[in-house]
Amino acid sequence: RVGVLQDKAFTFYYPENLAALEAAGAELVTISPLADKQFPAVDALYAGGGFPEMHVAELSANQSFRESLAQRIAEGLPVWAECGGLMYLSRAIVMDGTAHPMVGALPVVVEHQARPQGHGYVEARVTGDNPFLPLGTTLRGHEFHYSRLQVKAEAPETILSLTRGTGIGDGRDGIRVREVVASYLHLHALGQPEWAPALVRAASGRRSLDRAGGMC
Image 1 (cartoon, rainbow, N blue to C red):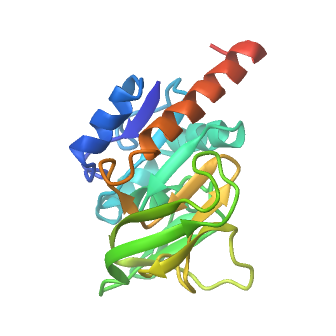
Image 2 (cartoon, one colour):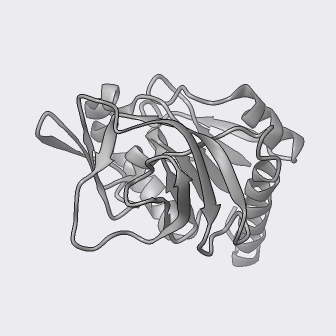
């Protein structure tokens, strides 16, 4: 069971990506961070793009959902997050000087800007260990985001080295925390055929661990 964040705040999913996950064996579960009160029982999460900044107050107000998702991530839930998903998993989204608390799974704060901070094609190479893709894998996709990370003295761990694109800055992208990989990169499954099977394998591995531990 692979959860997909999908409501008016999270709308950007290539249909081919969802079809590829199903073809790889996933049962997709639609999840709404706006309407659902608790994060459901799934084995992995695909947190795609959208416009969380347009619904930031509502997302922040749904504290029970945010906290239940944070707990599952702390327990080892595999998560692939793209752009809007990265923003939602951060500590907070800053809009017009006001910080709105988010899930807090990533050790970063995201600021929305008036102008695009990254726009165009992206090429990246996997340079760090992660739950999904082997070292040396080349990823190609695109980015289009108005947000950027607040500058902090201690940079988060990243697993992607960019040869093209902006990412989170300094030629890097792909924040890695526990079993989470979060980036500004949007992949297309037809151009990255190993992605969907990798996410489903991670979900299957998590399901096996949960069964061994007695979770249902």
